[in-house]
Length: 290
Length: 228
View 1 (cartoon, rainbow over the protein chains, first blue to last red):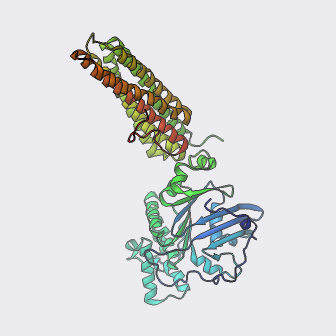
View 2: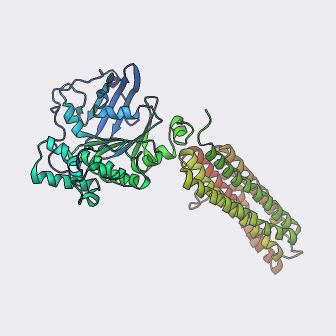
């Protein structure tokens, strides 16, 4: 693990109190202004994170750092808690009835689970892309990207500029600029997924969580998403949950392996796939189980 | 639960057996080359040369198998290190086979009844035994994933290198007989071939250590002064 808990850390209450000098809870991305080609994003820290579905303990005391402007891959067998862990970062986990999280999630120094923290602002700062492309079915390509921007008051030419800029950032503009007002659902699977990434980028997040973003895509569409991830990491902190270990090896600077709700090992991707330290990691990546 | 990737594992195991099996082919070729040298047996020497095609064929077979495994199975971790190491191992084995051929080719050149120098012959025989032992030990170390056994190859190699230098010095000491000098020159070339076989065995030992530890390092650095 990159983050070693101290004895003091381990005894901290699950939800740490905000220090008096902490920045205001809403000091997250404002959703205004374009991110430049190289922008310092925010890091994410998980400190003794636990997640539950009712009595089921899905994530068990994970300490993990996601460095800013890096791609981190989360690998592990089905049901190991990797998606649950990621969904705790933007508080999506708590949307499931009976689900709860304990521990600390920090976005730089902002306590994501702090009492004063605005959940909506957190989810704007920590965008998410899901396994299956899910563009808004009744909306056009343009409106899919514009929806989030309209919610934060962007209108007129600024709105059009932002949509174009975002579609370009998602590598989709050249393919859709002449059909912006056709239904988003009419695009190919790979284009729909990039549209969803554009929709996430539109509100200028700091962190992008991707939960199996290519599992429903063909190899060419997968390659485009992977290239996009590499490009986006210059501006965003990216966490990719994947079952495809070759994809983790291709896109991520660091890789974390989870098993039975616990973080087994985390390190530079190259080391994880050539010389892992933990025998369980070795057995998983070489296909001996999972 | 049945082991996952059983087919991959069987293919990798088979490739390793083929690569290590080729080292037995080398020891056999080396035995025959040394025997041919001892008895000036030109016919046996020609068999060593002809049989090298089998080692070359094995090299191509293992090489192709490794490429196929890389292309289709994307091995990682220890599997990846094993595959990468086998690529080196089979290359070294093929070169050891070539050195046996080189020795065999020198036999007819040295004449039917050469003016033998016992001091040189003794050292050649000792080098041959040591080189053969190195090849066997390199195979065993790789098969057992035994780093200590692999590293011991460097110790044996120092003896082989020392004998090589001694043969060189003994050849220089030979007097004015042109036939004796010519024979000694061929023996220097034989010694050089044996010394190279030892080096290749050490290289295989280094690959063993790489598979075990994940770190590649040379047991001895040829670019620096060798211990005497």
